[in-house]
Image 1 (spheres, rainbow, N blue to C red):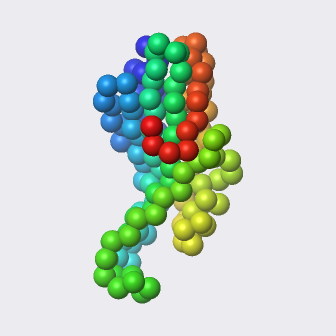
Image 2 (cartoon, rainbow, N blue to C red):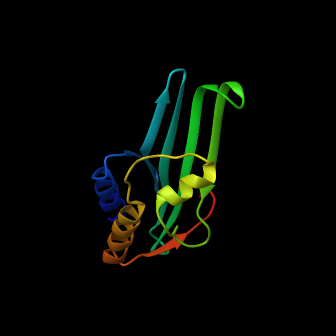
Length: 136
């Protein structure tokens, strides 16, 4: 089945894979910045829902930044911001998207490799991929 193949493939990328029913959640920390009294983390997430009846796989990607600790602009606290893809797959590098948060991260992460692997497995099993901007 396509779901088991996706779970195995996502596990190879080193993130956390959680499956419940016909849904798969994948999360991978792509960058983390620690300073004296604060920590900020940038996480790539992919939400996948398999519809065997329609032979479709629904995919939603997001890039989330969260921080905890002292921040010069807001004092003590916790902050989370999210960027989601539009109707189609996200284009460009994740480094470009992280600029939307006004942060500078030094890392290499190829989200396109994850998406390409998902698309290839879905096609191999005779399904199609549908992209969604928000949660499934």
